[in-house]
Image (cartoon, rainbow, N blue to C red; front, side, top):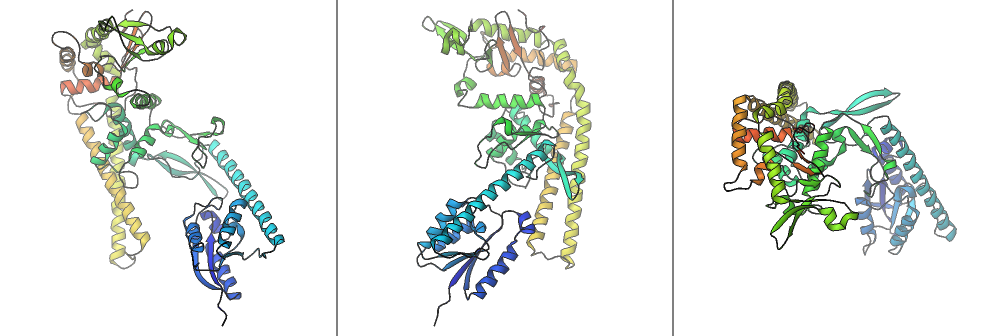
Length: 544
């Protein structure tokens, strides 16, 4: 009795579009099963790869088939494919795996490209593999060119949008619908909150690192877009992605994740979620916390101005240097200290002199109540506008939660009446999605409402400003001389030392936050800081 040849069928398409317009999986299956029946093969296994490129071997079903085909004894004698391009589109890799299977007595058979085993047919198979590889690379080149042109025109190319955005139809060209990004009010506030936490913290602490931000969000049940928990990588990606300032970068990386040349990157204009100044401040903050750039002792050391004092000439940090057996202490340009005058002509300033100058200026100039009122005027003027925006946003969130809840009730009614089957995987996925949207909308609305009520609790009056100025002066001073580092840095975030002047820079948002912490006034900012160089105006705050 003749034992029939055992066959394994390998089916593959690259994309959903190819499944619709090229050789689909069902068509490949039908032709493969018919081929096996016509030749008396016994079909023992079918491997289906529904969306994977044949230019590499990173395909789960392909690897499972190869593992089975190289085991002893092998469960099948031939591998049947629609064409060799379904198996591989790289001529070298094709031959590698054909020979690997052949060593175990397994043959690769194509339904549409039947070949023998003699040298001429082997050469023909290799030539066809070369053409398949060439065609694959040409197709990829043409597709990328079309995608780049689509991006140049400002349209979205179909990938999952960044958190805080959603894809909407922009215009129709023939049968194709062009799409663009718009701000998604459901998650936009979460993105703004992440930036605010990075720059200002949560009110109980200073600026947060990426890990602490993720813990803060997860601890308060602020979910990701799909209802999951936040990770460090997701938070860092949000804080460094230029899309949020209105400039999405397309074609930035290759398939191997390597950065492409700047000339190949396409900038796509999208609605900005975060201001440029805020974004730049976050990048500077992240760099300052990077241990490869700034040692931890610079960020947390006891010296008053270490980490915020810089040389105005080269922007290098002014670090502590000592002389005469540590009797004298100076802030010195670190670039000059490392490279000499070829790096920067630099300067050295006695530590006590610079500390006294900076702290004294803050005490007597910035903390004057009339000066505080002038500095904070623009911030306070924006409170009403921000309040109106918040009310509109809360209404949008409540509307979205109500719509999701209504859809859920309709689905439940359909299940109760037997119209829908609860065991349907698609229905379960739809229910879970609607629940996530409803719960997230309700949570975001409650958080926004609480922030709105908190911001409206206490007005900032002249009396409050005077109380803040007096208390801040006392807290900044240490009895017996010296200054408290943390209190000074709440009022000034950067000091630049030039030849004839010292420039002290700070943020209006940080100033308002310090006022809230000391005076008991609820924070009125409610958003990310609008400027790093907020309360410095011209040269009036910086005497020579």
